[in-house]
Structures are given as C-alpha cells and as structure tokens.
Image 1 (tube, rainbow, N blue to C red):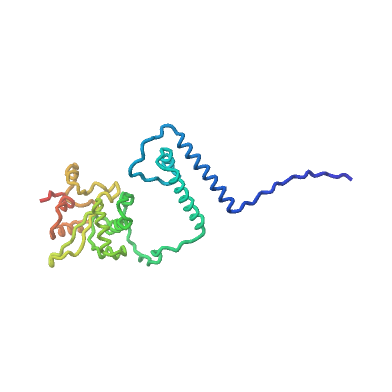
Image 2: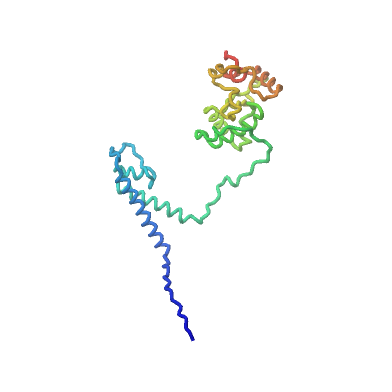
Length: 271
C-alpha cells in the first residue's frame, strides 16, 4: 500500500493587539511623521531668519505654516509640546464621540412654513457669495425678488416681511439696512396723502441682484447712466405692463421722493 506524504505548512499566528497598543502605535507613527516634517522644514534652504513679529499669532498645529515658523525659531519647544497635547486631546474627543449622537438643535422643533406657490425669478449669485451679508439678509433678498414679480419694485412693510420671515420688525430693519448698504436694494418710505403718516416701504431691486442678461436697465450711478448711448430713460423696465407703469408714475407724483428717485425711475435730472 502506497502512502502519500502531504507536506505540512507552518501557519504563523497573527497577534491580536489591544486598543491601547493600536493607539500607542498610531501616536508613535504620527510623532515620526511630525518629526520628519519638522526636519524637512528645518533643513530647507532659504529659511527666513527674521525676528519674531511683535503681534505674532501661532498658526494651526501640523500645518505647513506652523512648521515653517517652527524652523524660523518663532515657536519654542514648550509651545510645540502644548500644541501637540491640545491636538491629541481634540483628536481623542473626536474618536470618543464617534458613535454619540448629539441632541438636535432647537430650531428643528419650530413650525414648518405654510405651503405657497410663490417663486423667485432668476437671480445672480453675487449676494449669495457675499460674506458681508448674514444668511437671513440673503433669504430676505430672495423673498423681495419673488415679490417684485416681473417688475423691479414692490410695496410692503417691515411687519409683513417679519411675518413672512418669522422675525421681528427690528430684525427685518437690520436685514434691509445691510442690503441697502452693500448696494443690492434701494428703499423709500411710503407716505399717506390723507394722514401724512408713513404707511409702508417701497423696495427697488438693483442690477447686482439680476442675472447678466437682465442687467443694464436701471442703475443708481448717474454718471454711468447718462453715458450709456441710446438708453430709453422714460421707463423703469422693459417687461412691465402699461398698467403698472401708470401706477408707478402716479405714485411717484403723489409723495416726496428721495433725490435719486428721478434718476432711478425716469432718467430725469435731480432738482
């Protein structure tokens, strides 16, 4: 009887590392990488050896600028160790909170807006990219553009806008002031002919809000306005109904207007 010999293979066992060992190995690897970056920045030729600025602020830890400043001698060894400890503490908090769900913010419990068929026409993204504006100011600008419809102006009140935006009239006033300050809208208070009281707010949308194919209709810059050749200065826009033009003309003659209103609406010289 023939015996077939099967070669035996030696299998090496894979050591099982504890979480503490894996964490210590990761720390050692991170420290080696940081030391390598430091040595590379220190050995780089042409490093500025200028003195440390008087009002110097340390950049974020483990960034290229941080290691360049360390190579210049602007960051001491003690400061580097303190930044490393803060960095490791933040990373440990991030790891510990991986599977912990935070409570939802309080705004998630607010009532949803009521359904509406209102929509905004095409807008430029300049206001959306403007860091000088608050998010609520940008949202209010979109609502104002939707209220203008096919025209360039709308009559409203701060109370009405506050109900729409779910904000108080004082907040609406701040948003409107921001939009006026940075040239996105122009406003004028509406005065009653019977009582003399201010009863509303008239808002004009400027060219910076419209898309590029709609711009060039009306601008507040008088020098640029009168320098445009072939400009028809007897109308506010090109796609507005005659009824609204007559209404705008009558309202323009019924109340005292700001100095720039004649140039804006009718292309007339200010008195």
